[in-house]
Length: 215
Image (cartoon, rainbow, N blue to C red):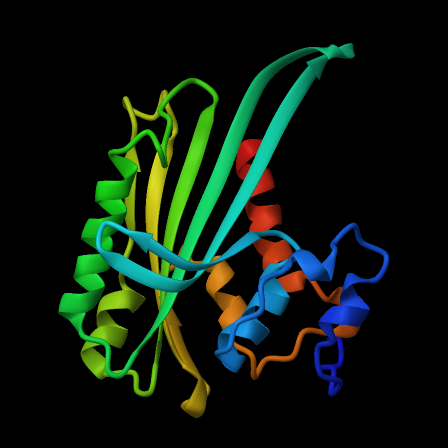
């Protein structure tokens, strides 16, 4: 078993040798969200203060992955597929099941719009991930999210699917609960240091899982 790192994650050091320009990465006044963005920036496009359907999210992140298969030559490609994730995060004092259910409804509403999901042969999947950062993690919310799974097939799966994922994290108590498909929510568990030799492992697991499904 690999030893856990005792060194804190350094985004500047991790960004060295990549094509990331840190000057293009937004800076959040909320220190916690800013540290989360340090982990997301390697795989996601980041945006501040996203407003959708009357809801405000201080942190918004978008991931886009494409898979292509070639026939002898890259110019002769076929079976192109696209997978996207939209991650929305905000703070709340004390989350409730009603608030979480409202986010689920928002996810379905967004999926009905071609601004967010374009159902066609090249669409493999779109994930809507909602993360609440709270002071406490009530038992009923933990129970609701722990057993949550919501995937919808589009045209019987011919046009792919979309999935809604949920997570609530309480940094002060180092607690997190997430639905089965909310792999990216691991980036919010800042108390779990990312090993320097594997600084993108949190999101790498997500990319690997999606790549296997696309392949």
